[in-house]
Amino acid sequence: KQGDICNDPFFTGTCSNGDLNWKLLAGMRFSPMFGAEVSYNDFGEASMSGSQNGNPASMKNEVQSINAAGMAFVPITPQIEAFGKAGVGFWKRQSEQTSPDLTTTIPNSKFITTQNSDKGQSPLVGLGAQYRIDNNVHVRGEWEHLFNVGSDSNYETDMDSYSVGLTYSTL
Image (cartoon, rainbow, N blue to C red; front, top):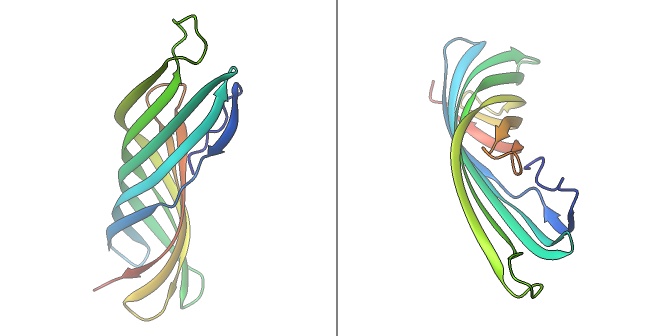
């Protein structure tokens, strides 16, 4: 979910601020309570299609990130443990916006498409829990939040990822 994409007060139409996302991660536990994790996240695409100030307009935004985080684990039961994480996300964002060319006198006769690609780093936090199926396999559910993705203030957004997955540990 890209939090602020659909908050343009001058836009009317359809807006999708979330998409199916996926991630691949690797991590290490230093002790029963502390570890670290590195992940690649593809957040999918957010898009808007409709009109802005009465003129046809559309926009799409795609974000990927590589994250590094420290983790803390707290046992709840012998099979369930909760965890929290904090770290940094190194993101890359590609945006495309199509809007009318306002320099022409004929309304809606010419459109301008602008593309923007930017990258940066932002703080990352997350919470989750995992259920131990056996000593090596866990079912995991989590929420991650990446702050302030995007370098221009018009389309700067926070990223939220909700995921369910399997983890496998060899240790």
